[in-house]
Image (tube, rainbow, N blue to C red; front, top):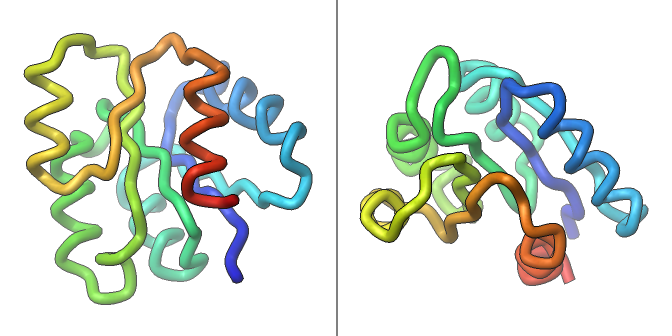
Length: 122
């Protein structure tokens, strides 16, 4: 069973936070990509159990990445949780309709982040 998370994020502070959070789950591996192109490539090659996807990357939006992942046979079944500084039900609803499995607002509620990770990587 794959026990890894791919975090597609361009902010080093957010990456460090997720790295620290995952020290609580040493059995889970973390892969990081800092842009959409590298993230989609890593998703195909690594086949993570979960993708955490920043909604605002330097080269694409979360919705664009979701569409790429959904249209690629190797990644279509991987759950993707959008992480975003955008707040509000409208953006969450739009991204869920685009194919996201969940939506997590930044700044992170650590307990909520852990619950998401535990849901997909028990």
